[in-house]
Length: 508
Image (cartoon, rainbow, N blue to C red; front, side):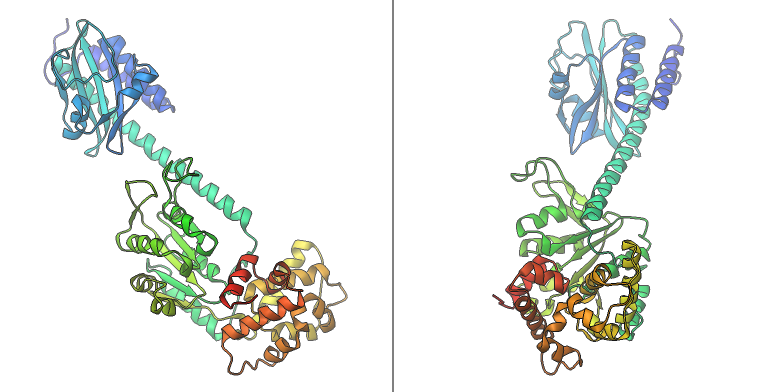
């Protein structure tokens, strides 16, 4: 027998450590490498029933083992403080059960029976004083080392295992995050209809918008972008993100008006498996996906009262729980919200929380409607024309009269309607040039004389914008024989948007 001292390891123990360290460093499959390492402990030091439990949500579940069946691994699960294994994790100190046959600390949940078994040792695996799990083993009559030596060697090995598992967990978490983002961006790409490119404009009102963006982009302040549908609120949010310190992190979006009240909380905060009927697996919400980056919530005025309460809490505490879950999740997210609704009036009517309104309205950015942007219309027409011609490999020119009609039209659907109209011009127009007469086919709303009188001279009179928008929708529906789909296409709106406005203005 080789001579030992309290501070020295035997040659056999050093050999075991070297073999395990080499195995861990060269194997990418952490579960397999840990299982093989436990086998090394058994073969060389005659430690039995070696196991590694990982701490997951205050519970120790078996991750790798030697001599355990699958069913026994499932049964061997401990709460913090439960049995010798749970106590080791809770106390952050090794726990020794000298006689497993008469000590209640040894629970033997797996049910393994071995008359040779004498003692049990559980050692916490720690990384920077945080417990990641427990390494355990039983000593039998054939074990070559005593309690102190077992604790010493397992403590050293637990440090190696702990670091390896910690790195594995970080890598797994990052892979999951990247996978979630990949799926999210794929979903966004598949559903994306409009892509305005960069912000285009040089009118005084847009210059003011640009100035605010430059001033606040690099901070973490919450922003509320306001403007009519189709004015480019998402584009402004994206511009803020791209100019911020978070530009390398995710930019995640959610249109609150497109999500039902019953699902909005799940979309924002995620849900646990079984939280509701269709929750077949755990799903992260937009806040988790945007961790470290920016979350853009469009149509914020459409979220339910209960979602408003939870959103306020996230803005205040930067934490939340998934639907159906109890674990508190902390996030670092910059929020940019947008709306085309009058939030002040909604607050007065009790439809929107006042405290949430003030939390959101830290930096307001008001986007002007297209009809108020003067020569920007001409810039946007030329931009969309060039891009559409490139996409369709077709050359189309506009006469000056046709351009004037485009510039004098009120564009109730704003930039989105303009983009759709230019797309139509390129597809239908001829290379000889699109005339003012041709524009009546390209933009049917020009046929409506009432609309033309109200807007072509830009004389709005005493009417409010809502009255003007209502009349524009009514006129377009009349020209389309009350076809909502056709009217939506001509106005550059989605069917969901035009139905919402019809309900808002009580248009039948």
